[in-house]
Amino acid sequence: MNKKEKSDKNGISIFFDSIGHFISKNWGFILAFFLTFVVSMAIVWYDANTTETLASFAIEEYEIGQVADKTIYATKSLPEDMRYPVAIEKGEKVIRKGFPITEEEFFKLQKMADSPLYVDYRAFCDKILYLLLLSVLWIVLFNPVLLRKKVELKEVILECVLFVIVFFLTSFGMKNAIFQNPYTLPVMIPSVFSGFLVAILFGQTSALFFGALLALGVLGASSFQIVPTLYTLAVCVSSARIVMKIERRIDMVFASIMQAILSVVFIVFFKVMFNSDFNDAVFIFPGLAFNSFISGILVLGFLTPLESIMNTASVFRLMDLSDQNTPVLRKLLLTASGTHQHCMMVAQLAENACKEIGANALLARVGAYYHDIGKMEHPEYFTENNIDSANKHTDLNPSLSVSVIKSHIKLGVEKAHQLRLPKQIIDIIAEHHGNSVITYFYNKAKDKDTNVIPEDYSYPGNPPTTKESAVVMLADVCEAACKSLEKPTAQRLEKFIQELINKKIESNQLDNSALTFGELTKIRDTFVRILAAYYHGRIKYQNQKDPDATGDSESSEKDKSFTSDEDKSFSSEAKSDSISKDGDK
Image 1 (cartoon, helix red, strand yellow):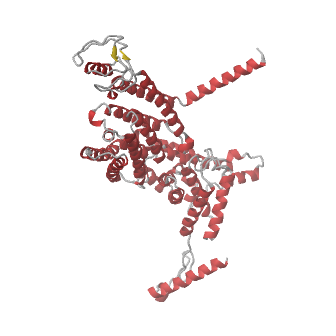
Image 2 (cartoon, helix red, strand yellow; image 1 turned 120 degrees about the vertical axis):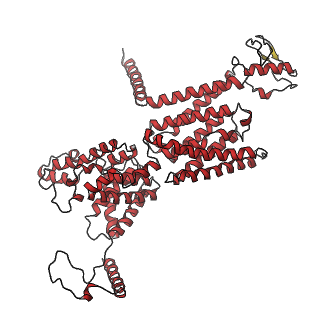
Image 3 (cartoon, one colour; image 1 turned 60 degrees about the horizontal axis):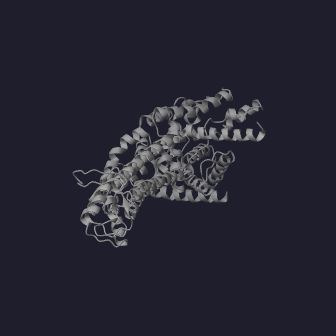
């Protein structure tokens, strides 16, 4: 075997190995798409079996007395039956090109159209190709780059189920005389239900992309009618936008009412745009309003079991987890009060910063609440909990201290899995320190041994992969570090926080977070505004004494209190003096 043959063989081997690796890694997604495609293909087969003739023309295109534009032959023999008491012989000319269609010939055409033995294979293949193109579009849209998050199998499964339901109901509706009208068909399509459910469970971006795919699915299932397609797209977009503002379950009722109104408005708009009459408005308007309203109520019923089964970070689940009376947060408060206070402050910083950059503020806040729950196991080894006690790390070897500090990440992730917290929260817990070096103990160890490896003194996690996780990381380090800053004025805080952010950039901790420099500037300004307000100066009153100082406990009544006017005058002068001094500095 020469070198070229060996090279070709190795190339083929690598190619098949890569395919095998891809399949083994994504077999769940492949299976979900395959089953969805098979079920959709079965629906298309049913559709072609019951509505199309062998000549690839709908039966509605023919009528009695019409001059046939082509000759149609019977390729199969059909016996008489109760519904169609006429027989058709194989090879028979059912209609002849250039001759008017008689009543008997039209009757035979209907018999062929309704017969399962006559399938329009061309129309069937056309729709299969359409579904293949739709599948490719689905794969293109739902990738981490466009979606800006990792696509989970549970999301794909739910969307596949919803797509099949909508596709089937649309195809089924076209068989019913009531829903054959393009304006009445949307009454039975659960597009609002699908939009609500995907937006609440998986976010607005997923709902918008899925809404586009759902609209294209309706386009194919409705024999390419434009009105049901536009309606589906419009209500999916509006429903995804509406539910992004809700915070309580009762808000779903108001969201349903708003969507019911919008659904009617959309159809009115389409009727005006396509010059259609309003004769069927008595059926369409109440039907669409009921569809939209009941969809919101059904979503409320489905949400609780789906949130539990899929363990998603929906807005309602996050609101439940943000309750400070949950057992784990209560335990954090009692066992590690300093850590609890730190988490509350980090949550405030992260939430406001995410609002400024358009990220998920609620997810960041809840993630910050739980990001340090691993410290509950050994709270005494973390300085924020050592208010009156000595530092436990004073007499410990740096390597041992680092192992204790690093363990709070692993313990936090384990605790989060026990509590069945959503994956997004677990990711924040695991990523809020990234793989950065624990500088204090690394420098301390390096003073003793210059051959110390930085990796041994680094956190075991991965750098943040989402904006919310990165914001929590920055809020965590800024809140902790700014406590040690002397005279924390706004100018000093801004410079110090910028240095902290720069260090995270230089250590490649923000590379995978998709944060831009403009967003980092907004995050810094938000942190400065909140921390400057938190560390603002206080006025020292004339009779204020150091509680540890000794002296005469007696004081005059005048020194003990001020009149309200004197207090206000003193406060004003003190504040003016303080501002003047800060300005000089």
